[in-house]
Amino acid sequence: MKMTRKMFAAKAQETEDEGTIRVICSTEDMDRGGEVIVQRGIDLQPYSANPVVLWQHDPMHPVGEATSIAMEDDRLVATVRFAPPGISATADMVRGLVKAGILKGVSVGINPVETEPMDPADGRKNAPVRYIKSELLEFSFVSIPANPNALVVSRSAAAAKPGPVVKGLYDLGCLARVLGEVGYLRDSAAWERDMEGDASTLPERLGEIMREMGQALIDMTAEEVAELLAQPMPGEPKTASIVPAVRFMAGYRPDDDTKRASTLAASRRAVMLMELGGR
Image (cartoon, rainbow, N blue to C red; front, side, top):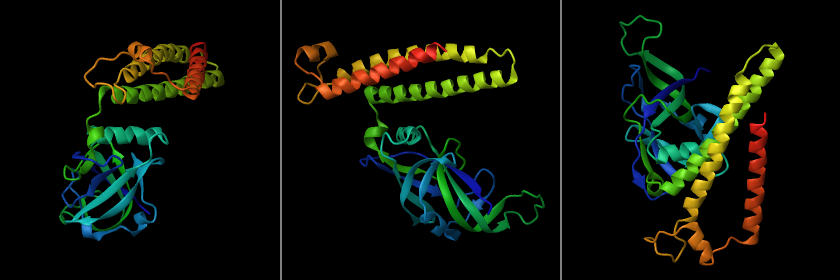
């Protein structure tokens, strides 16, 4: 089975639905490769049996599922429900980027069943074709658009206009993920150096990067948590500038379970960062 991928641009519009978005997966407009997918010729049955939505066509990175998918006015339209927050870092990243209007790419993966040349006089081996009949195998959010008429037509209004605190906490998670990836690269470089017996300095250089990133993560954590605590609590005036110290003086306290969990998590992170810095 041959899978052909077609990428489309996406644009977001606001709705009040926090957990799902609507996307136009495919249209009958000519793409930048000079090809056309006949929409009414798409068989949805293969996809409907397992309607997983991917990131960059990678089966190792599912980010949600299509709760509905159908033809509407000769366009393939789907409703996507993302994985709940916290289950997948990739899904959290894609959901945030899509709802913020930054990620604008959608791509379908089809199995061509019947095609015809766009130009019968074009005798090139890879000449553009019209996909008369095809099977939808999957669709993905991607970072490179091609067809300007495939759109994300609805997203969360709240997520579309993230406040600085929400954005800061999201950035904090991204930095932590990148730090972990650099750590993997450092370990991989060290393993390769040991195997090849060379004098590569890459492990040490990556270690320096990790120390800098680790300190940045500590500083960012302190800053973003302080900003979070500075947000008005229920019943507090939203226009007031309330700093964490004032709130705690006013009697706000985390419960014992929260304090124990926070202390334990902070201790584990500190130990991890010290170990990373000492490698």
